[in-house]
Amino acid sequence: MPAGVWDANINLLDAVDDGTSFTADTVGQTTPLDVVAQVEIGSRLNEVVDRHDLFVTVRNLSQNAVKASTTVGGVIAPQVNTPRTVSLVASFSPPAAGWGNDGDVLEAIASYKVLAGVNTDYSTARSQLVIVVVTS
Picture 1 (tube, rainbow, N blue to C red):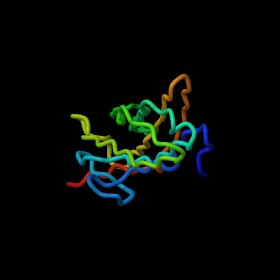
Picture 2 (picture 1 turned 90 degrees about the vertical axis):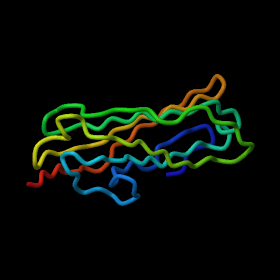
Picture 3 (picture 1 turned 60 degrees about the horizontal axis):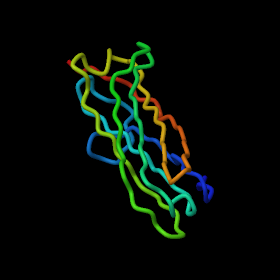
Picture 4 (picture 1 turned 90 degrees about the horizontal axis):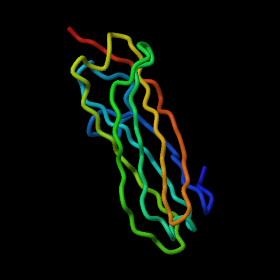
């Protein structure tokens, strides 16, 4: 759904194979993982925008544990009377102990914050589920 003129949205949050745009159904226990967010800032909000930040966490649902988190984004320049659509990529290396055990389920969750003068807007999203695969 497109953002309203004073809104900012995460339109899509997708866990993908490292360095690609291909949706990850599985991830190796020690394999890097990327999370791609398609974000949109409405045209009026985009006229006064100062910065945007995407806060991304990868959690292991099977173990009820946060495995990694990061923030991407930063300062951006306003654009006159046009919506802004951007792909933001958060790259994750697996933690020292790996993503989890064979068959564990991972999920990426994100919040998106846009600052525009006195205006602030937020959005949240969840990715599809990804299964940890341990190969011998």
